[in-house]
Image (cartoon, rainbow, N blue to C red; front, top):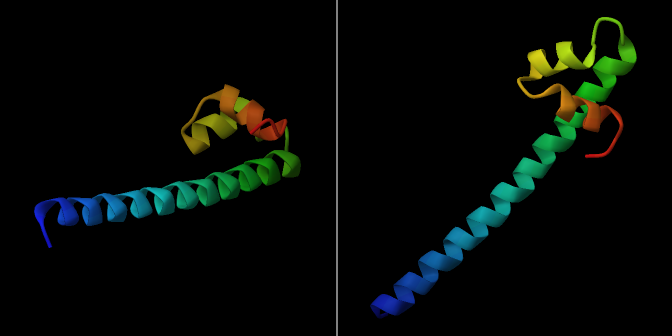
Length: 71
């Protein structure tokens, strides 16, 4: 096995790892979105966009997009 074969194998491994990371990130986003929507629906007065954004650690704009199901 030459250097180029080893490099190709490493590139393939990194490619697969990147694909797996993207899939995992998507699952995390789906869970986050479901939890945010559930909190907002359970008590909209307590869980304003700003309160949710502070609790989650993101912007109120992202919360609005999640609640309105734009993401």
